[in-house]
Length: 265
Image (cartoon, rainbow, N blue to C red; front, side, top):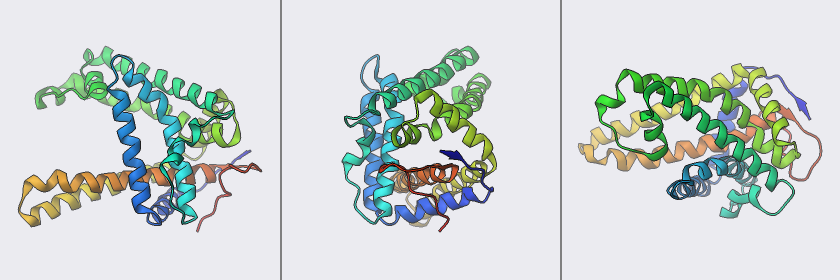
């Protein structure tokens, strides 16, 4: 396995590849992402352990979206079972769950630090979906906790961005996968900055378009009815694009289940 250094424009290429593959199987990829969100939500409501268990499952489900992307890329219909590819019986399942446990510990540690900033308001809102007044959300302590959490989440995201694919397809031990993932993101930081900026712009454009359509229809109550499916579709496109960054950042050899050699079509 070799780590590649890529130009900044690769970030735009990943976006384009993800959108292109999504539209090969738009209903399937949207449906799988919706199932992804439903599963996480259902697990999250389990008393006491729900939030932590949902975090443990996130790397495995993310890998499932990558596996589904490869099926859609071949213009085949990805079935729901693809979402659970990393949890099937096999030598990598234990490693994937260990990776998930590490993600849960890291994320909850960030939430714990945010508690020190605002007394736990931000963590309660994020983890339980508790409703807060606009005054509380706009308060200085809440905003500080928000920004601290975002800054601390960046290195966590870098460690776990490629890790599920490395563990599942390349049998890299969880600890090493975190190191290689962080290194790949750091070495290709410009490409990932472009990638993030483009997706941020697309989400803003989707929200703006939804508001424009609502305004033209003259019915503000339709905003969420329009925004939700549009946002779901754009989020599904984002998850469809993730595997392409893995292919480009890592040049892998052999293996029936390894990501395909990267291309820039």
